[in-house]
Length: 117
Image 1 (tube, rainbow, N blue to C red):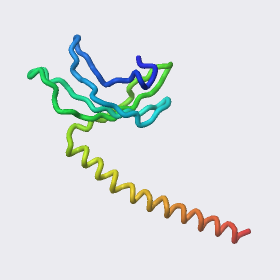
Image 2: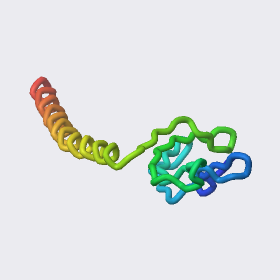
Image 3: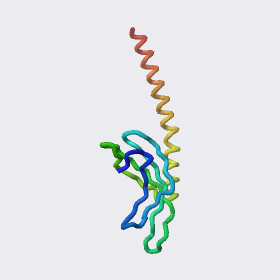
Image 4: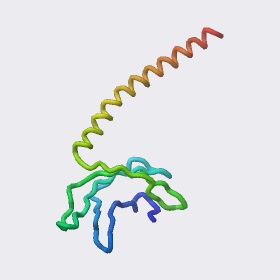
């Protein structure tokens, strides 16, 4: 089992044949719970060719000195990736507004508390 993030790979062999090959990876979070994004290809055994690339977001938990996969989500095509991107880009302005509104509410609560003193 991998003991460091540098050792984590998404390559997978079945009976000595590489059936999933990692093309690239980005470590999104580090620590005892690590999140890694992989770009990979899977082997089409019938054609003996690798299929178009996919992406995966994988969560690992470090336990007893080794990282173990806890969960993953595959992004299987460009349309899905773009939909996820659109949702995230749409949500962050809302999050910023809510955060600002929450901060304003906190300031109003502080002013009310000051008035009570």
